[in-house]
Image (cartoon, rainbow, N blue to C red):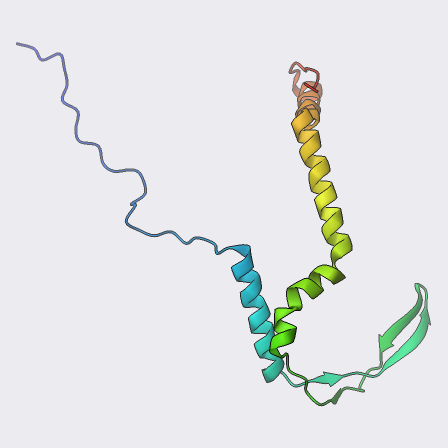
Length: 139
């Protein structure tokens, strides 16, 4: 008697072992908060100092340059709790132009993607290179 059905050997587990925990990147606010706290702690460790500066006429216009060999230590002013707490809003205020530009570029890219213009450009490029067909955007 011939057996038409073959017995399949038991499959070995090929998927990742779920008992191992993978590293998960912390939330961006945790990273930012940790970075601020570490930098604030370094203001207590690293000695404070400054260089003398001098206005110099260069090819790029007048620049405020550091004078070599004029470093001197000054009285330290370590970061207090108020500076630590207000670091994020102050940073937003100083970088508001970059933040707004990032939001606008992201919104424009999202609009172009939603209209299908990016996909159409890729199709036209691949058609020019490889002979694929193209279509018009849906919006």
